[in-house]
Image (cartoon, rainbow over all chains, first blue to last red):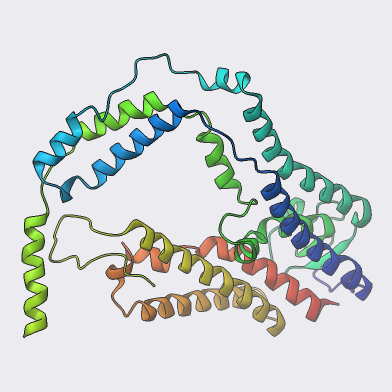
Amino acid sequence: MAEELVLDTAIRDWVLIPLSVVMVLIGVLRHFVSKLMRSNQTLDAKMVKEGQVVVRARNLRAGANFIPLKSFRSRKENGLLHVPKGQAQNPQAQMFSDPNMAMDMMKKNLSMIIPQTLTFAWVNFFFSGFVAAKIPFPLTQRFRSMLQNGIDLSTVDVSYVSSRSWYFLNLFGLRGLFSLILGEENATDDAQRMMQMGGFGFDPSKSLSAEKDGLDIVQHEWALPKFEKRAENVLRKLVS
Amino acid sequence: MAVGRDDKKVTDDLEIFSADNLQSNMKIIYYSRTFLSIISGVIAGILGLTGLTGFIFYFLVMAITSVGLIAKANFSIHAYFTSWNQIIVDGFLSGLMSFVLFWTFAYDIVHIF
């Protein structure tokens, strides 16, 4: 069953290489288009203020041990964490009241979906239904539907890959290359996109009260006395 | 690489490290692993490795990378990273996908047609 198929070199020149090159170029294009469309949204003063308070509380908690107990207390108690009483605007309602937000989200989604559908349609149209590549390791029958998407031959060895499946392989495997050539914050990172979605409905009063609870349970222990000893150790080592 | 963390023994329980430096170290590891997985994929494809030998080659390259990174950190991991896992395991699986893709690509171009 595992007899070798002979593939035409034209397949290499006109399918395998162009497909991969196009995938890379489309990734680059998408990166720059999404960069172009990213609008810097304006925030209102209240939201910025609340956000800053949260950041300050977080910093205080992180650096609590580097300041004396008195300073820590005064920072904690002097109104740093006044939780505003006002009705927290429901993020859903906020989205509807502010058309910019919805637009922003739609743009983000579209810049991801449109190129993918277009490329997939293009691959389907031009390259459907033949073997384009062979992966250099054996796989079980289970992978047939994954790797030979588009050709219905049950006798071909599973390690042969159809062109449509080669497209999918490229889609997943090129992520590493993109992070190398486009830098860290490239638009193809789906996980990061999901994070942004999660942070979208940001409710300051809720996170403020969470920070307040966090500050309340901080066990304060001033670290600097230990540091003097440590500096002494270092200096002694230098001298001796 | 920037020093991410001070000596642990002296300041026993307090965690002292600079988050930015730590992050930049992680980024360096990620980049070097991705780069090496792509390069090693192309090499494996050109050499015509198939089946298990290709994966063994990948493991070998990643092990060499780990050793190289540890050597770069002057064999004192805790000055730069919080744990051993970060230097040995991180970026391993994401690199595997790139490796397989470029391995297949180079192998097909050189050997199949």
